[in-house]
Length: 421
Ligand SMILES: [Zn+2]
Image 1: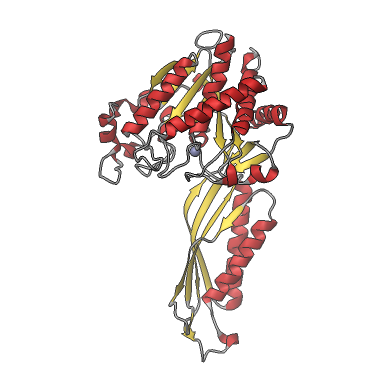
Image 2 (image 1 turned 45 degrees about the vertical axis):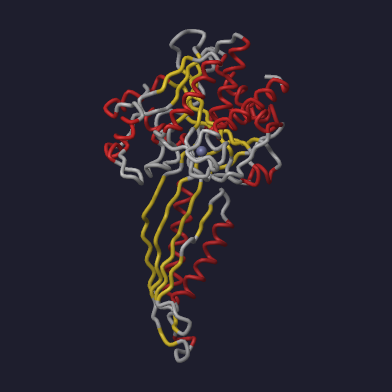
């Protein structure tokens, strides 16, 4: 794609993102949730745009909107592109939608030139990534992988409507969920373009970057237990102050995480102090720890080191320390050859590339269970996302479409459809 045509494509993407932003359950704030009338309406519009781009279009049995641009030889495996079309409440207009709209432009450009690749291209507008309505996430992408847990159909929204009931109301059949599942050989890989939702590209002065992995995470409830006592009578050297211990540990967490290479982040986001009075030495402090990183091994190593330090601080001060993990998600590494492919495409259009982790979850987490995944990030203003102020420039989107098109064109070479295997 030449710069003029990718800029025209970007302008179309911006206009279509505006059109989708108008499909909202509330007029003054963008909210579009799974199986709502607005979800079906957005699917309809996106389906029309896919058709215009020369794709065969269908809505699958969980409510994803899907399109296929046939390969030179009918029935060949496809490169899967896409992202999600649902939103959080009071959302921005690019989180998810940008990846679907940019993918349509890549296909439209091939269609306009009458080109067919060795592999087909399929695009999916996933129906529910955010989990806004039912509190369960990745429903659309887990439809494709065929990994919906049994309990999901009975999950209810705030009004007590179950997923099964909402499906029926939307014209879908809960008994047919498994029809959305795709065979492993259907796709060679999945490429997702998404806004960064963080500030790294902006700080690097780059429009585009390539995701190395979607961060894994651990969450723990931790507790220092000492001895409450009179703030006026207990000498300093004889205190078992739980808050002083927690404070010492928190500075250790910050320093140790900062000193780690490898993009690890750790946060104490909640802290409760008992008994919590101005004139009483704190006897017990409960605090949370959230720790994330793109690779599980360094993440676990740092976590274990931090817990050891917590124990050591408690022991030295004559307190006890306990920690209990209540949430864990593994890191999702992006496929190495797809990272190479995307990095080459990004370098070709902007002269440099940046490899970065994704701090937020994406449909690629679910898809990675079955197919190799790659992700391309686009700079967003101030790193702001899940907010109406979410913003990208047409110039950046033009570069993103050009890079995605370049990566996909790799599948035009009959012998090169092996990325990621
Ligand atoms: Zn998203």
